[in-house]
Image (cartoon, rainbow, N blue to C red):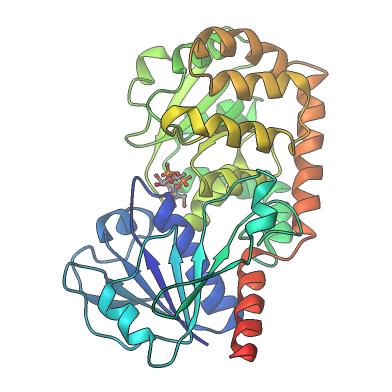
Length: 369
Ligand code: TRH
């Protein structure tokens, strides 16, 4: 199969993050020839060292990468066209699709809302006769599933079982001796990848007064106001932006991950450790519905649910986090949350992943053509 994946970067790194993972899964897992069209290469280069931010055509990890500029190159469509998040491939490319219509997929945003099941896989015929199919990621068998590499659980479990592997990895990220010593002596490791409106004051207030010390690791440029909030009990360390596999490993290292968007959220689930989701804010609080839908499928203890709701509250987030965080980190909630995170990962890992589901779906469409 030859596939074209189209990615328009709306904001931050999630759009390209999802597309890049999907491209690798289809190319490396299914042997597809993948061409990834990206409009903003600098965002791509942040999460994948080695990507040139100013090149029209390049090849990386066996995948062709096309700069989707105002005047994109003329290339014949493959057997499958995947547009991420309704990004509308270039009109000339769509016209060229008429000659031999490919399987055309609109990969939607992830949501746990029940209506997704009814819309997953639905066709939509256009006036020009081309048919687009909606493909919805999701948490249930009636959806397209979630991106997850085969062998992930085994690799993660081996890594998490090895103290020296964690230490060597963190050292490689630039963590100094004092911080590594702190972790060796029982400091809690928390990663923080959040949006600018996160209730950091409350997070810092609780952690800096806790009996167990914390090392808070945040990527460069995220939550720039953290450092002044540190004290003996709450240490702050910066990590550079790293490629996705290392970002995943960082999440595997932590006791608690604070993540955001869509892709880091899924990867925190795959760390099989407790995490707080900072959901991407939408107009009119539409994200709150998505958050509730996910929490209904994430059976964390009440204290953890209260914390996640508080973290995302449109008003009074700091007070709610200050009240909820100590309870979520204390017994018995913390142990229950840890156990639940492992069980939730295991349950999701038992399902086929999004790339396999999508490849099978496209193969079925191809048969019908
Ligand atoms: O960056 P995000 O906030 O992105 C998105 C987009 O803004 C999008 O428009 C919006 O609709 C969506 O959120 C909900 O969050 P996300 O999805 O978690 O993407 C971050 C990506 O960056 C993810 O693929 C992991 C990657 N990453 C690295 O590879 N290395 C790193 O060091 C870091 C910090 C992140």
